[in-house]
View 1 (spheres, rainbow, N blue to C red):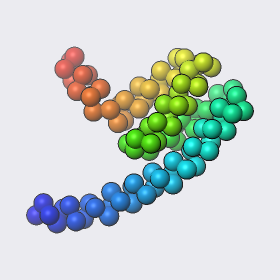
View 2: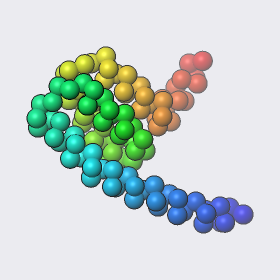
View 3: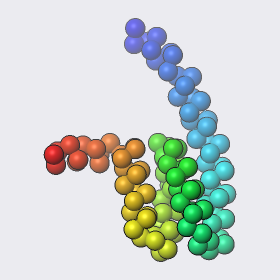
View 4: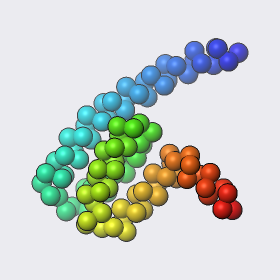
Length: 103
């Protein structure tokens, strides 16, 4: 039973990982462009962060997300903190455990 479940999930996991690689290529270019141009367009940066969140299960996408957060922090530290909490709510298991223990 477990073997059949693994067999069913494996193609889904592989597809998800391939999609993350494609997203990484797109978002790496966007993040680099934002930083290179010293973009201050809050809406553009926040939309980029929002879309990137969907892929932050992946370490390389998370690294890009953090890179953009570090840049955005100089522009709007409060909004940046919100994005960090969004990430934690979606993907950070340790954060969830800490929240449960505090309750």
